[in-house]
Image 1 (cartoon, helix red, strand yellow):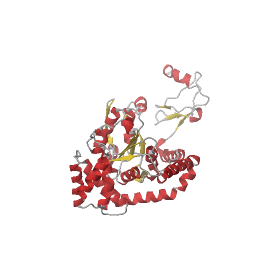
Image 2: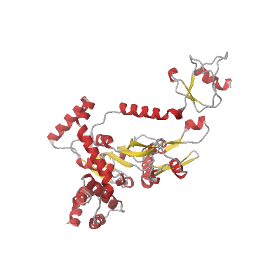
Image 3: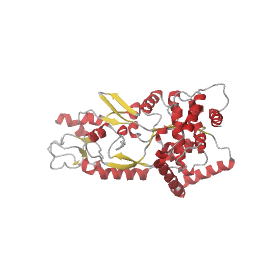
Image 4: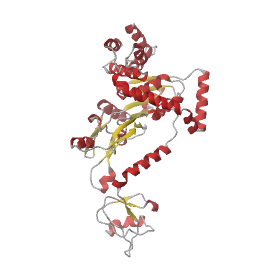
Length: 422
């Protein structure tokens, strides 16, 4: 034992005493953080000096009894340490992009937004400002997949087994997650991988969830999505298509729900997106540079105010933010009661057919987006004006590209809409 632990004893030479009694079996032992060590030791092994004098102060903690207070403290600390976010209500212009984002928050089944436009037009700022408006959802406490206690399709395997066995679930309210997917992320970090710590210390195979697990029932945001590596695009395509992420590696086979709103942004000058991934985005927003001189001055002034005193700037938009939150909450609750006439459904499908849109995803998304817009406006009936507002964003990116065509694809959709709807 002395030879095995000799190296650790030499490296971790300490200044304190070992606790007087250590039982041979306990869940975890961690070196006192006050001594500067965060490493855990397992198995009940105490390390002794040459003369039998203990060399380390080891504290045994019961994680189960302290999990509630620890998680609450972590949430509070995370909230206080967050970077200040530019308020959504303070974004000047870019109404098309803002509307697409709001409709996806109201109805996540629309399938996300692809935002393409010039650099420096506030694409990333607008998406990240959405965090403040995200509503709360019911989740199973302590579940890494944000499982829905009422929807078996959004439950992780462990939660589903508890439901089958008749065990009571602890339910809590939490805000919808927004997860950033960096361009340099590895496939292991995105999909999840084997938990190395448990494998080395406990000798068991355990799964460590990745970003797709964290994004379940939330938002997955990819900035500069057209620069994303192909292998990560394949992973996103697979998960977006099935709503589940399946991991097969190192002897682990596990599936978990991965239903998320996919939001991407990018500059078309830096490259086009693969058609397969482009089709997975429910809506497409085209963003242009503001040309009006007065609006440009206002944007510059608002940004300067925010940079000077973020807290004061956010407080000045607090009332508008709360009003927008209430609108979203009301629209989400009334969405199920919104109706669309059969005649309008037929005309939507006729537009899609005459534009030669591949597949039926365009029809489905247009119907959903029109209902969400009606709910946002406080109506329970969809009118033609709602469809005219959303149909270019739902179909623009699904049209077949003609390199010789100079007209914008969104205008083609509008022309066909007025032709069919009269």
